[in-house]
Length: 275
Image (cartoon, rainbow, N blue to C red; front, side, top):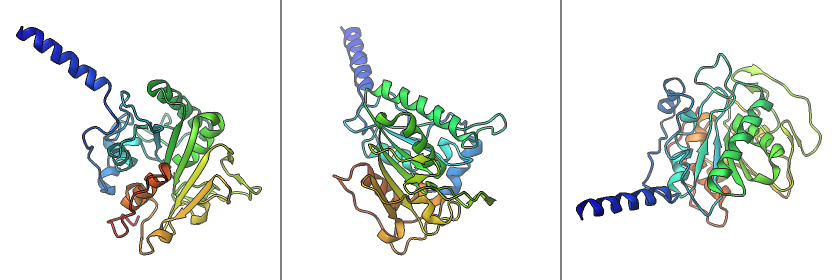
């Protein structure tokens, strides 16, 4: 009898695990930017940030795919956004894209079209695993721009793209490298045309020292476009480009972008990284 009870208990435990809800036990959230960035070199590019890539996760909300920025990987860049969203009940997924033969654990350095195809394949895997019809993207820096390219490849599968300091219209500077871009037609981004069925939310900071000048992280107005500059919400904010991915202020704005019907308070004055 004891053995039978133990066996039944084990089966029940496995069943509970396989049907685990999105809001499981809290995942550790970090706002320590230097510490998190050290993972860029210490962790494998395949290492997931806390709360991410739980392939058994189920939720009534769209799954959220997080994309890191240039010369980053998922463990380094997404140590705040991934657990924050997972703790809020989202099924969160992430991938290190754009690796090269020489980049080691670092991604976001490959050809942008190849990176978009890689992420599109990852999107297909997420939909197959979760049974969802669509995904939302949250992309920091280049990650937001790659999400725009993916939306051209999987238009009907993308609902919302939240760009966090994402250079939608190119940038005059990437890590000190000049990359001035020609003017684009109205409504045309450097990363291609907007898709009318996709909702675009762009979060920017006036203190951005990488995606410059900072208005390149905003899109031309449109019925499916929302542009928010952090300082219009929290005037005293000094958050910089890297800090945007680790800011509780930005985290609240991301949550409000993903679920505008259930807005959360934006914690102006929360600690932030100015770089």
